[in-house]
Length: 388
Ligand code: PSV
Ligand code: MN
Image (tube, rainbow, N blue to C red):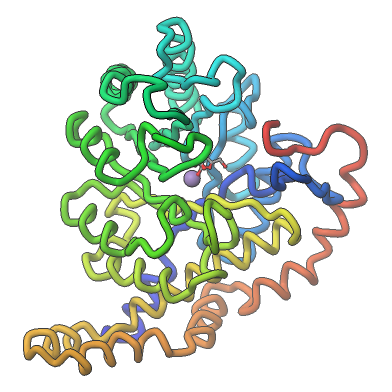
């Protein structure tokens, strides 16, 4: 087993990126229940994200979603983030909410719509230049609902053309992360439905393109850690959109529905030493807090990722590989499960105390008075929400 100093150092170095949209109002297509104190501006979303970092110490960056987080001056927004102790992270493009995109964005049969969508993606790279962001995350809602509706292969050609144009625009230190999703909003075909399709495009593009695994974007029962292991082996895992799901793309708090799955995923990451920020895997949250308070929802999510990571770090790798080599099926499984069944909360509390943080981030946030302050201060204006 790695010694506890090594485990603690790895936990201290861990980085988890927060999504700006987690702090705005969200809901389902049936109802959005507004919450008091919700940010009205990207600046206020960043202020809330900074609270999560202040109490956890491992969430120093905030992803933006364009146009939800559109501002006149991105360099100024980056300075605002820095003043609050965080930085701007991944830029998420949005080519799924405009009326023009009913039949697709970059794969739309109409070249004018494709040009418009590409224009937005290139604008996102312009924004990255100003924010200093490394990663552009691309998710396409493109697809079809009915057999025969459009030419499946032609849509792949159109997708490839757009991806190449964006790829060419990236600077040497920028990357493109391509996200896949099984279904929704399209129900017959999605143009990037699975890791294989995303991987094929990323290989064709080159080293600056890699796949994003959104944990909510698979069919029930999919072995996600297998996908993670394969992508890591090929150097094509760009990052995660963490969340958890019971049924489809539920966007619930990561580790809430299936903490064992999260542990199994982190075990694959740790196995190849890909936890270190230098390994280039972006550990992002992609969640919505529809009925729970948002800032504590994000803190809880960060803690869940930390707990899964700590357990993964506790796996006795020497004992595991000895058991595997010996064909000791039950022994190997026991080593794995011993790590999972360890209560890592005292270890994480110790790490926080050593970092000068409160050992209990949830309680520390509740006691901070921040929640009451934003409810009192954020009066008037329009609360940020899905789509704004
Ligand atoms: C799509 O379902 C997705 O996972 C993509 O990452 C989008 O950018 C995000 O959700 C919007 O919340
Ligand atoms: Mn996602």
